[in-house]
Length: 284
Image (cartoon, rainbow, N blue to C red; front, side):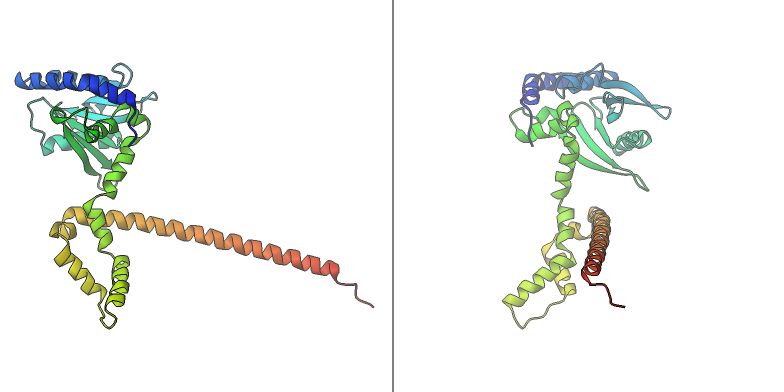
């Protein structure tokens, strides 16, 4: 990931300052309002958003108010941010509240934080609406010298948001998911490759897809990769994407086939006309 020097320099200049501030308000058991102010400061001083034009507070959503929102020049929401008091333990009901805000506002990205712990969720709009914790971090344990920490901050920063880095970051995380890779391994295409190579190694031995699948599922992979809810969800996501890919591929092939047929008929008509011109007139 290409991280601009402007961002790196800003993190280097302000991260330690805000780590001390977060530590201080945590020691004082500060309330939610104070925590919101600190988070707004982090958004500006570390993540690079303009406090007056790009950060809005108490954003109204269906009669409720989300603590903070990041907006662009068209007032479109990029991130909804739900803040809890610094000493609060972020629980599932807090996650649900933040996700509900995002769902009602039609926003893909939601952040839940108590200023120390940051949890970044991506919403998937379907029936039902689904959520995925893309990543999380503790700001007190971060270092401006760590490339990994810089990547995590950059993905939700002004510079990252301008270039949709968060979407690229999300795709990278998905591609490296053990559930996605596990399901790709446990597939008919891989079975065929294994059978092919086994035939080379052991010419007279026959093995079925079912046998290969059982070996992979029961002797090679961990149970969570095969039977967990996350694995089943990954399988559904893979099937959905591959189905769309195959449909689009078939449509393109059909368009190409029709274009080739049209071109062939045009060439035949042209050849026929040329032949008619070259034929001598019939004698009567």
